[in-house]
Length: 219
Image (cartoon, rainbow, N blue to C red; front, side, top):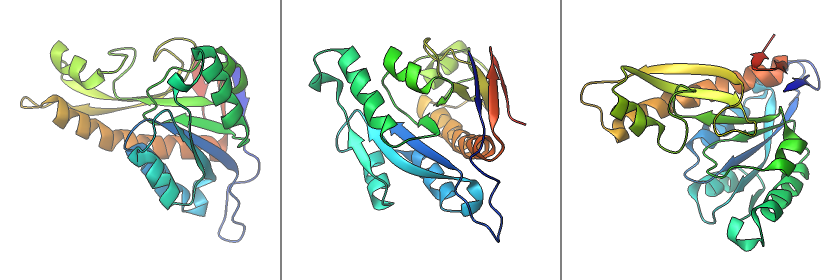
């Protein structure tokens, strides 16, 4: 994988407030990661605005968060399409209609396909609640606890054809306590994950980034 993202303009200043990047966020649930991005993007110095939010599920709180913030939303359910490929093509078209610079999976529980990756390869980011490549998949905190690790965390990465396997952009760690449950560890990871997502996406849209093979560089 090789790609490059260059900001549309200079970073915002107090005299010249420019939102330089357009973000589309995809989610499936409560939208706490989305809320962190919405809060950050309310400050012009963040360097981006969220122009659309999509989901594979109707009625989720994440869509309500976006609507309250005045962000356009859409829902595309896999079962409403003849095939997974048709759903992927429709998702690609809908996201492309927002002309995004970056697409962020923030708790989006569906794997995208070839059409989507062709359109947004190198520009589709995902935040996962484990220290990849350890514990990919749906149950990162549970699997980490079962394995007995002493440190857990979250990984922000560029999505490719694999499952939680793309080039790693950033990672953040949290301790695993002796009395942790899946719920308490998950919540501790979420706090760190939200902070990392805001900090790193902000740096990416303000400074640009490159992807060469498995190496992601933010100048």
